[in-house]
Amino acid sequence: MTAEKENPLPPSTLPVAESSAAVSEDQTMVDAILVQPVVPPLVPPATTPFVPLMAPLPTLAPPIPRPLAPLPPRPALPKHQAPQDDQPGTSDSDSDQDDSSPAGNGLTVGYEASEESLIIQERQQKAIQELMMKRRANALAVPTNDMAVRTRLRRLGEPITLFGEREMERRDRLRMLMAKLDSEGQLERLMKAHEEEEAASTSTGQDAVEEMLEYPFYTEGSWELHEARVSIAKYSVVRAARRLQSARRKRETPGEDEDSEINSSLKQAGNLALDCSEFGDDRPLSGCSFSKDGEFLATCSLTGVAKVWKAPQISRVSTLKGHKERLTDVTFSPVNNCLATASADRTAKLWDTDGTLLRTFEGHLDRLARIGFHPSGKYIGTTSFDKTWRLWDVDTGVELLLQEGHSRSVYGIAFHHDGSLVGSCGLDSLARVWDLRTGRSVLALEGHVKPVLGMSFSPNGYHLATGGEDNTCRIWDLRKKRSLYVIPAHSNLVSHVKFEPQEGYFLVTASYDTTAKVWSGKDFKPVKTLSGHESKVTSLDITPDGECIATVSHDRTIKLWSSRSSEKEGMDVDD
Image (cartoon, rainbow, N blue to C red; front, side):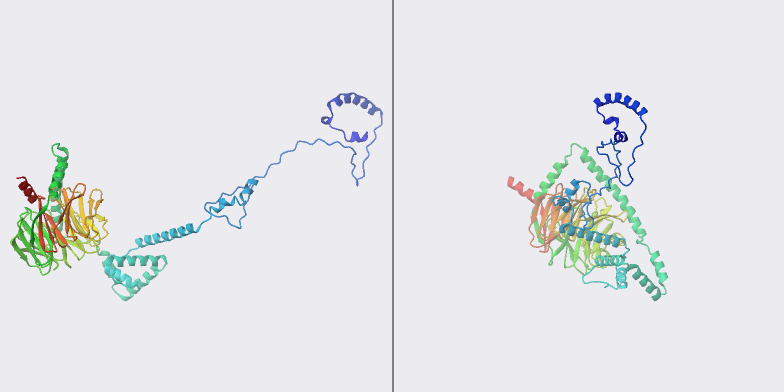
């Protein structure tokens, strides 16, 4: 009884049937407790705790949920990096542990760098380093004068020139050397030491520096050049307005069919046939040109003599003697019957058709290549192997302009029909277009892989043809500033190109493969092949009406190709 009183059961553990009986028993128990004396409970000794024999399980309070510690953040999987061996992987669940199984290792093996990827990375790193070296090289100030380049190389302890090295190659070598020294941290030290040596070796070093600072980066032009540019500007504006007006009239007038005109001209060019052939000299011929009316034909040869012929019979009119070396080119004036010749004796001469020498143009430092008249007839342009082309006044013989810009010899020259532009090409595989009104280089046409030997502007005003030693003829659009067509013209180098002078409906090219070819000016498809020479064809020209073509060759012959003779033969056959 005491045990039950000491360990009473909670009400929640009593059965429902016993709860009603326990109510009546409690009243009797209360009465009995009031009568009976209170007996104190027995306290068990402290050494041995009291354990009831049949103690009911006490009811436990509902457990209070303990807050869980936050899970550590799961590290993100590295991209394209293999896990390191000293970093064991952590997992939060059994599924994570399964990932470390051999099957799961396949995912991590995919991020391991293979040998090919390592090689590619090495190549990329090497390419980046080379690119940075080039950028540093371009950022360095490298002198443009060849003597200054040689002096700088000597100061840096390098050979001033190598066998077969040209000026541009020497400058590139200096640039790369300075870039290498700059990357190694030695450039500033070396340059400082050389500056101290210069200051100690010369007492006028300060004056030299002042002179270098005062030296202009351009060449001041003469007053004659200023007047010539003003005259060319006025002349070209009128010519350009006339050309645009003509093109606008053709486009807007319904009665004029340009396609039919082109087809008629191409049909006429397709009927070209050999009309006449004549020996022009004892040595190979190098150039030819028709007069403005087509009545005269001038030729030049390696004997140093030029000859004027009556066309189309090719009967000699006069002989022009005066040059000391071989002749390289001849051309007629577009306004009168005067003609100019270029020679390897570094001079150009102006002649009359009767053989009278009118003027001599001297100034070039090496042999001349080609010569051309400005459309106004007031100026002459010459190219030379001294890497320059020059502009001369016909009336006074004064050198108006000495123009540099090519890294190697300048060979061909051509004037725009408006008179505002001039084109030059050379052995540096580059063709340049210059604005005669400002003196600036407005276009640099890169595309040929070998020297460019000839060029010609189309009368339409926006097409330019170039031919070179890569056996191709390229057609350039001056408006888009790019190459439109690449014509695989010949099996040998292209020595000369020429547009039909009226409308540019067809193009003629001459080559060292002993042929000349006619191409459509619309889509530049082949129209006619002129075969008849036995050796290299060096030059050609077209009459102003476009009906006759003259070619000269190393076989010493002049050949006239005409469509008139074929028409006459056709008429005779019909009769």
